[in-house]
Length: 137
Image (tube, rainbow, N blue to C red; front, side, top):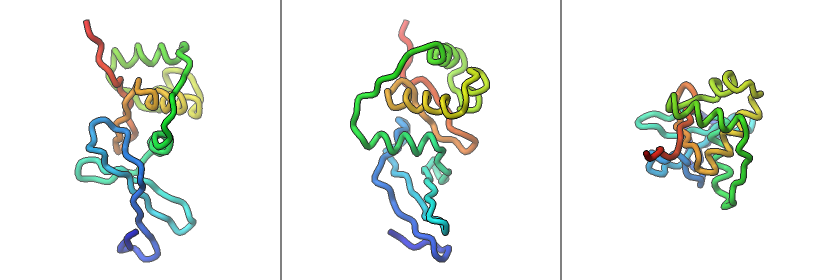
């Protein structure tokens, strides 16, 4: 645990690894705020960006080694077709295109990342979700 230049705030390193396949297994960091809440940060190139709720959940659930099962329904089929045409999607775009509520859309994306169907790419303006595999002809 290290002391930050801001008084009263401690910075600790978490033990989980980023699920981003592109990164070199950089560990996320978190900061204890004055109201006992934790804010998580992911290192991206030369910047630290705040981790989204989806990224935090993925990091937390990646620590547990479990098989992931999900139902491949209409929304998942739509998402796969969208990603083949557009290469990436954000949570907001998925909500708007699918008509799902934020909670359900977020959970679908999290499950697909945990099942290694999608890959999450952290970005300052929102995480991007891409296909984790490429289609062979």
